[in-house]
Image (cartoon, rainbow, N blue to C red; front, side, top):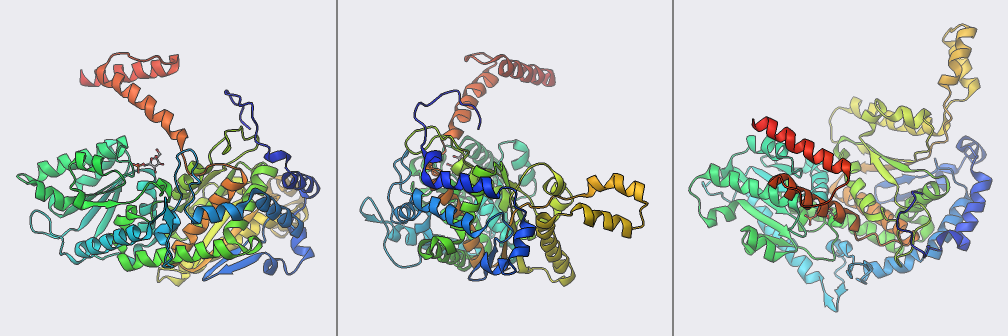
Length: 563
Ligand code: F6P
């Protein structure tokens, strides 16, 4: 635990609760158990510890668990009131207590026809209306009916947004690229480093480009700066254009109509969503507009359907057979009892290459908290560091540390069976690598096996003995395997909803509000102070000597360049 500067007198009682203490006790007894022995003892282990949901399989048998472990973990979930909190979330209760907001991304994909109420108002008609607006608009763009100022159809769509207004739709576009429109390309600009937008604009023509300015608050500095640069580029490139012409090339996605108007986008061209949708949970809303244009509304709806099916599973399956709950509780087992600090997401599907980055925000911005719902100090570790990359590339980069490093790093391997590529030989190699890696991480290689292999390779005994310690693999590294038959829009929806609910369950067990993000505020405020000083060359604020030294160095270096 990192030491805290502000000591809150009140401490969260979680670690002294019966379910927690029982797990601690159990941990002491089983912490050295090797998974190889667990597999040897129980030939049915895979059947016992795997479940299917639609076309998805979760194999969690390669975990350091027994029936007893799982029972105690589910006891902890029950003690935390996971089921009650889940029902409160789905029914529109304001469980985001610090902001007084409901948490209803699930309403965006509610395909049941049942109403959902926030402040006594059924939100479903608004959700449906916005989906319809997206359908009509995207159909026009995709069919070439939406004509730019020069009478040409749109061929390039640029989503300008950051965080949840970028990562979600960006990841969805990559994941569903095989379903994409042949003649429309979608781009994402997020970084305020001008190099990002410059690079993009170099390849675009104002007459065939549509900008989507996506920002929940419409106050985010990076997004508004990029949007203004895009507008300027458009006006300079297009020459004499009218307000009507701008309307053909700029649309907004936001909850903030006033700010959208101020920016100069007609509210007619604004796609809405609501304060009960968290930014990092917003890809199901009109924030998904870029992905709708790219893959079409029918595919987007399929994705919503898949997510809704996972919502139903999460709401109705008993905890013991509930995919998000199982994943969440395994994460808690490693994070809080084995003290694992991170967890890796390793997709063996090129289309899912952006999933780790997306989940970094979804998970770490949600559960990176050290104070519980009641404002008490959390005396246990909470959100784990989520990281990862495409599995196959990672094998040739960071897997060494997974296999022989000193840390326990639980992993999620994600693979799809039916590839989008026609090269079956590539798919077979990819699948074999995925299977082999989870096996190697679990089994490792002991001394005897290592010696034998060296002997078989004809290495002389004295040389072999020197090498043995370096070639031993401890194994016992846990992994979940999530296997999807084919990465369809529906399967993607289910996969993403599964992770969202996993994050929710962990937040409930840790007694956190997973739906605020006060931690990003301080940096934003200090940025504005420093920007003022950087631009004016004057000092207005007090800084530590390091920040001051860096600021001065920046200023000096700027001047030299100008000279
Ligand atoms: O800075 C963090 C954050 O507030 C995220 O939560 C959010 O997804 C991102 O910024 C973008 O915010 P907005 O959509 O309001 O521009």
